[in-house]
Length: 154
Image (cartoon, rainbow, N blue to C red):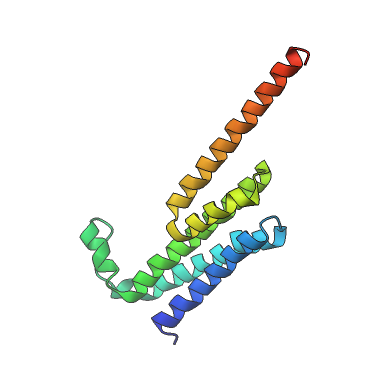
């Protein structure tokens, strides 16, 4: 049987491979499918397996902060919690990549958002929406300015 530290290393490498695909080839359909669907689903299956195998060993609950701390005192359940983060953060990073591609957002604007999502999850999502909002505003301002020039005959 594999140890908890080795399992931790394996899931981290899986997630890192997905993130590297998102950053290196964000517009490649196969890479996006692997990073945004295959890897998160594999991580989700591992999460399920960890919970099925080790939930009975843990004390604690989700009804209080102390209960969650008690759950995570079990290293296998702690690993399951980490895998949960890895799967969802990667899924969100893939969504950001798909959305940015569909909107024509620059890879250079997307990359820092992906880095933040990778390291800080929700902060990266906030950053992406901030970049997106600024991009949409600029686009609307350009359209408005162009329409005004056309209307004035310039």
